[in-house]
Image 1: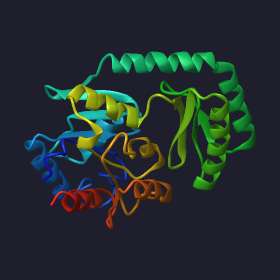
Image 2 (image 1 turned 30 degrees about the vertical axis):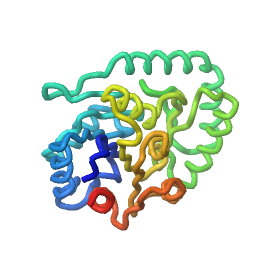
Image 3 (image 1 turned 30 degrees about the horizontal axis):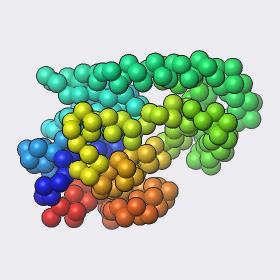
Image 4 (image 1 turned 180 degrees about the vertical axis):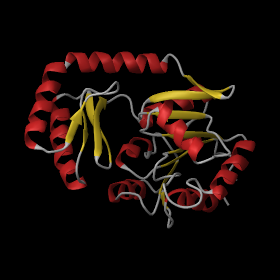
Length: 256
């Protein structure tokens, strides 16, 4: 194992976890993570899920290893302390405050955008505690069209960005992403991008799959073409296997 590796950040769904197979998170990958953590390597699950949903899936998967940190809804950080996950401050409070401020400042135009999209697409649009504009499309083709509208809107309102995972998208503050949250964990742990590996498969993983965030960038056989292209462009590793088996392949290949 390379003495330089000190931090691993993995997406959850489609990267280490799948809904099929005897073990949603491969046992061999769990064993490898236990081995690495015994060597002092920190592990982060970096997901678009909220904390309750993530904890439920970890429990259902009967995982025998728990991450040192979790990043939820692509921006909130929680640290494993004393058997539970504690909100990391002041990051989470600042994140909440900044989102509230930008959403409030642009509330009229966001509302008008929501009504316009609802009139033209038969997708599901709603607001929740994390975003005033969320959408679930009927297909990826439909979501491509919705995302194009949101990207055009974000070009006019640069503080906001559309964060997409498959047929789901939400508006978010541009300064908060899987990448910036991982950089905050690096700061807290006294680590650097040069000591970090990041693995993901979907569009919302792109902010952490860059050299300014991670020295080792990994995607899987099931990674989207855009993700594979970005990882390849930065000299990263694309596994021949999907999901958790691909993450294990990458760790064993890169750190023989």
